[in-house]
Amino acid sequence: MGLNHPEDLELWRLWQAGRRPGRRARHALGHAAADVRARVRPGAGDGNVAEPVPAWTLSTRAAVPASDGHEGGRVLIVLDAATPTVRASLLTPLPYLTGPVQVLAPEGLLVPEADGPGWEHRIVSDLGAVIGPDTVDAIVSIGQHLDTGERVHRLARARSIPQYVVQHGVLTPFTPPLPRDAILLAWSEADGRFWSAGRRDVGVADVGSQLLWQAGHDAGTRGSASGSAARRSPATDPDDRASTADPGARPVFLGQIHGAELSRRVTVGAAMRFCREHGVLYRPHPAETDLVSRAIHAVMRRRGIEFATDDVPLAQLDAPVAAVFSTGILEAAARGLPAWAYGPHAPGWVHELWDRYGMRRYGGCEPTPAPRRPDAEPAASIARVLEARR
Image (cartoon, rainbow, N blue to C red; front, side, top):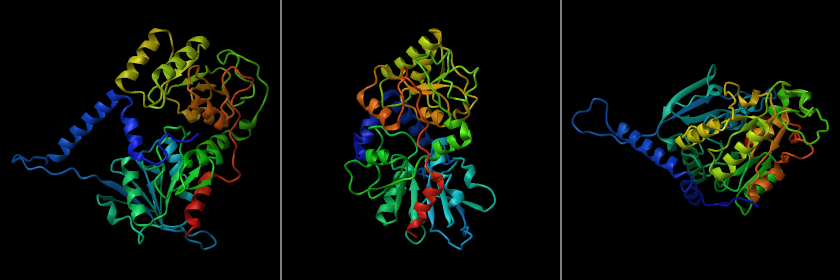
C-alpha cells in the first residue's frame, strides 16, 4: 500500500478540496477578506490599490565550526507552521548544523529556536533573490503541500539545489506527494517505502523520529518498563507496565474529528463509543475549532461525555490514551504509557497503518509497545545527512 496520489500534487489538492466543504468555504471567505484589506492602501481615498505581496522572515545564523574545524554547507529550513511536530522535525537539528543556517517562515510566525544571540532577521518578499546555488546548498521542509514549501521546492528544483523532506507524523494513503527529486528523511524503512512507493525520482534515508526519540528520552528507562496485561478497562485498571502514568489519572481519548482522512462517522463514532463505554475523557485536537466540530462537542457533552482540559501539553500528559490513529498513541507508548488504537468501523488502510506502526488494538493482550529507538538522535542524523554532500 502507498499514497492515493503518489506524484500529482494537484490531484491531492482536489481530493482535499472535496473534503469538509464548509471549512473550505470559510477559508475562501477569509482569504478574500484578507486580499481586500491588503489591496487597499492605508488612508487611501483616491481608489488606488496595491496588490498583496507575500512576505517572509528570513532568520540567519553564521557558521559554527565543529571542534575538528569542519564547517557544513548552507542549509535553508523552510517553515509553513510552527506546530510541535513540525518544530521537532525541522528545528531540533539546529544545534548540530555547523554551516550557515537560514530559517524561512511566513512573516509573523513565531520561531523561538531562530531567535536570540547569533541570529539576524530580515523581511523578504522575493524568494528568488535569496534561494539560489550561490546562497543555499540544501533546503529542508515537511513537504510541498503548503504555500511556502511549494514555492521553495519549485525554486530549488529549477536551480538544482538538493531538496530534503523530513517526516513529521504518521503516514496515511492521503499524505501529500513528495516533491520531485527530493530526498525523504523517514521515521523508518517501512515509512520510507510507503511514502516513496511508485517513485523513482526520490531518495530515502531512515533517520528515525525526533518526536518519538525525545518522548522516550524524557521518560528515561521508565519508558521501557514492561509487564503483562489482561483485557482490562483502561478507565479502571491501567496497564501496570506504565510506570510513568499517574495512577490517579483518567485515560484520555485523543480526538481527530477535524481530519479529512476519515469520515466523522468513524472518528466521532469511535470517540463517543469508547468514552461512553469506558468512562474516559475526550481531548479535542487543537484544530477542532470549526463550527461543525464545536457542534459535535456540544452533542458529546449532552450525552454525558466529559472533556479533558487542554492546559497540559500532550507531551506532558501522564494518562493512558486511545485514538483512531493519532501520532499521540506512539508518543504515549514511547513514554511508557498504555496506549491503544480503537476504530470499530475503520477502513482497511487504518488497520494497515496500525500494523506498520505497531499500534495495538484495544481489547488485545498488551498496549502499544514503545517504538524502536535509533542509536543516534534523529536530529543529529538529519544534520549529518544535510551536510554529507558538502
